[in-house]
Amino acid sequence: MADTSTDTIYALSSGAGLAGVSVVRVSGAYADALLTSLGVSPLPEARYAALHKLRSDGDGPVIDQALILRFPAPGSFTGEDVAELHVHGGRAVLAAVFDAISATGLARHAEPGEFTRRAFENGKLDLTAAEGLADLVAAQTDAQRRLALRQYDGVLADLYEGWRARLIDLMGYAEAEIDFSDEELPEGLKAATEARIAVLNAEITQHIVVEKQGEYIRSGFPIVLLGAPNVGKSSILNSLTKRDVAIVSEVAGTTRDVIEIHLNLGGFSVTLSDTAGMREASNAIEAEGVRRAEQRAQDAALRLVVLDATDSTLPEKVRALITDECIVVVNKADLLNGKYTGPELPDEIVPILVSAETGAGLEDLLARLTGHIRDRLETFEAPLPTRQRHRDALAEANAALANVADAAYPELAAEDVRVALRALGRITGRVDIDEILDTVFRDFCIGK
Image (cartoon, rainbow, N blue to C red; front, side, top):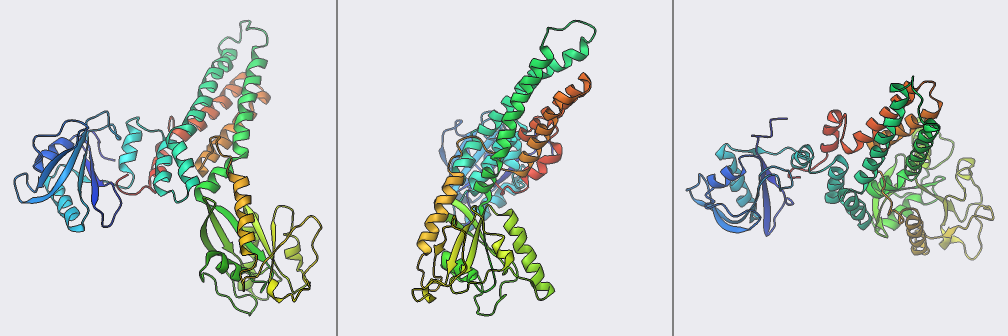
């Protein structure tokens, strides 16, 4: 990346498309000079909005009337001199403003996530806060908004940096055994240090146990529809989404691949997947569909096992899916004529009787789904990791600290503590982060 001490960038910071007002953000050493080149004179006082006419070449034709705001370094989002141009949101206005900025030769168009990356590099944000900001912009449900806001506010960083601070303190005790191996150290120092490390590692372990909550809130709670062919899985999917997203046919085996849709249930994002019918496959294509269904069954947070209310047979592949951790949905209730002829179920299983054809029972199904998701995800006041890189680093720290007590030599115990320190530091961006910066910021939108 270019030297940001002189490299000034600009981009549309508000949403794309027609709008009453659009915000163009500028960041870098030439922010004030760029404003002057657009005819903004005198420059507004810091953090006070002022109305100015924007002109190409400073004294050329008027482009637009804009509210101008200045945020001198270091008191800005990026830590650099920042300017905002609040212009009218028409496409022609924005095109003319961008052309005029480019013509000054003082700034270039920003790359995706470059404003936030500069904020990180200038110490305004840690990596978890930067990721929280990206999630806040992308949030589509209330739960996603709340989780992202807590992360942006530093809840995760405070937790991980608190663990790092405790490990740094313990590192001194671990190294004391090396540096003063020939001297008599306080009695019980080694045992006390190992006990404190064990307590810290138990906290990390507990944090990892609930790690999937953050992933489910951020990316969607994965629910999969499973069952034998022709029991009505696709019809239920269409009924729940109120649109035809899956092909419905009386021919068994219509669904060969996984069909995935997204819902908002009770303020939580849900990913609902329809899969191929579970049976002994008759050809290679169907076999692949069954394999993918089985894989989704393993990966899902919740399985909806769909049965046919008029068919007492139950394939072994389907029977194996029915546990007290799934929800059993018995479809085709409209065909019963008052007599249940479906498969027998264990006493502890309480099925939901529905009809995808008439809609009967679907509200009960939605209510049960919503209740289940709330029970699993609603109590997330504790900080939650939200990304795979968080989980990888936590697992590395967890494994390293678990080795401390069994280390044959003090040097090995100290190295285990160092490994854990580096792993935790990578999450917030304290150490060894050059190789992960591009990964963190690549999914940001331009202007953030």
